[in-house]
Every structure is written in C-alpha cells, then in structure tokens.
Image (cartoon, rainbow, N blue to C red; front, side, top):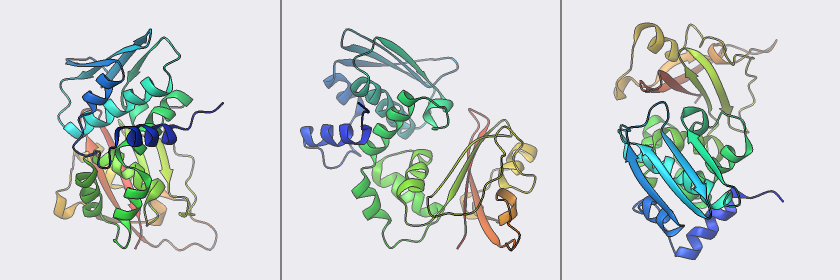
Length: 257
C-alpha cells in the first residue's frame, strides 16, 4: 500500500498539538521518534542517516551556513524515520535528493513529508492569497515558515497563487525543472544541457554575476527557457536566481506578469 507522506506529517502535527512549526526544534522531534542528531564535518553530502532496530542516528554537515537549510534536512530525515521505519537502511542526502530531482520513491516521499511538515498546505495557501508573486513574497513566506528560500519556492510551484517555473542547474548544466500545473508553456528537452545563453543563470556561470536584492529580478523573454509554438509571441518574462556556491548551482525562477 502506498504511503501518503502528507498524511503522516499531518498526523504527527495533530498528535503533538503543533499549530505553528516555525519555532519547533526538529532535533526534538527526531529524539521523540527514537533518533539522535549530531553535527560533524561531512564530506560530499549535507546529511546522512542510519536506521536499525527502530532507532536512528542523523548526521548533518556542520558547515551548512543557514539554519533553515538544516531544518529542511532534519525534516527530510524525520520523514525517512516515520515513513521507512520497517527498513534497516542508510540514507545519504545532498542536492540530488534534497532539491527533488533525483528519482526514487523513498527520497520523494521524504521530501513530500518535509514540505507538509514545515509548510502545511492550508497555511501556505492562506499566506499566498491575494499577494502578487515576487522574490519579496518568497522571502516573506520563508520567514513565516522558517524555511529555506529553495524549499519555499518548490512549495510555491505546487501551491502558490501564480504560475511559475523553476530550473535547477549545476556546473552550468540543467539538472531538473518543474512548473506550476497552470503554466502551459512547453519546456524543451534541456536536461543535461547548458543553461540558455541569455539567462540570468548563465551570467552567474560565465561572469560569476550575482545580482543584489534590488536587481534580483531581471527581464528575459519567453524563448529563453520555453519553446515557442507556431503562433506564440516572444513576450517578456522575469527571472531571478538563488545561487548556491557550495554546489556551484543556481535555481532559476521564471514567471510573467
């Protein structure tokens, strides 16, 4: 029987009587579920976990700068604990599992659990209602839920009130893309190819250019990231990037007014 990660997250919140997750220490929830957390200098990964006989040891990289990033990793590992407790297993997590583009049911389930635990669907939708999409809105949602900008953007793709697309690239190559259900533009087969030459992401990889908050939103055209149909016009769109030097990666967020 298929596990519903969101249901498991909601069940945990209801069981513990948690209405607002933003101040909750994820280490306490892992401890509550027979796990322990330690921070050490990890190589080539952000987090890892070993489970055996109903107990688990979660290790996260002490070099991670942002607490919101650590919170997401811990929520992801807690998802493994609650969803995959019947397995004696080890999990190693890096950008391929935590950014959502690595295939595999267990990693997707852990990400879906973390998203619902940290950003419950009803609360997230309520905080988007009536607001215009912008990087500022993502920052506000991130602060509200105490989540990373990246995880907040991925949640907005699924639940937000404005259609957007996101493209995750690493070392200048597109690794993964995702778009809102109501964004109907066609995306060409660009996985494993260089980012578009006229994209903001390419400015980072080519010129090491990272725009300030005031200049974060840059103008592009539809053809930068999307495939134009026979009758399509190359209309204006916007792009802003979240750059992670740690991975030499960029998350491009694309939308139109």
